[in-house]
Image 1 (cartoon, rainbow, N blue to C red):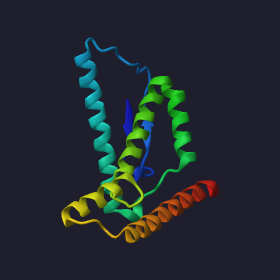
Image 2: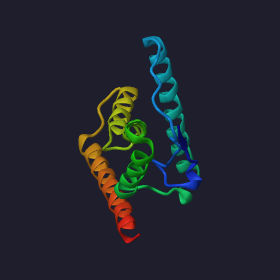
Image 3: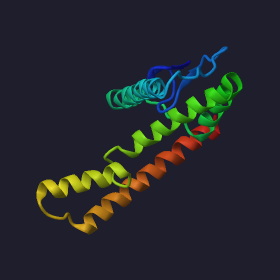
Image 4: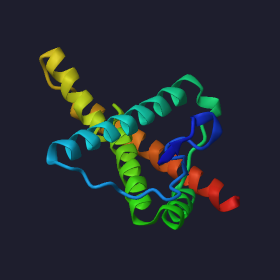
Length: 157
């Protein structure tokens, strides 16, 4: 089992405590059971990610971001303790985190494109392309600066 640590105890995004002692995948007795267990685990992980994002919005001053170095170190620790099964669970959590972040309604991300389409549909007309391009560029620059900042913090530590 991977224990998911509340945001106040670790970096935002990915923070897991591997507790995989002796845990091995259990073969499902039927495709229905496999689907049911997969859906339950997926729901648990999505709920965790949703709670993390809410905590970051509610308490932005307490949010800590894990960059690529910390994520790689977590993956290594989980792989050492949980083997391939633990690494697969960690990979699933990582991918769900990336999907959740990509779905945020921030220009430059997929969620931002969807938000523009929704606004255009509600307004019944196209938005000014130059304005949308400018806002998207500024937001993308902000995302790059955030990534550089997080990576710089990791390099200093």
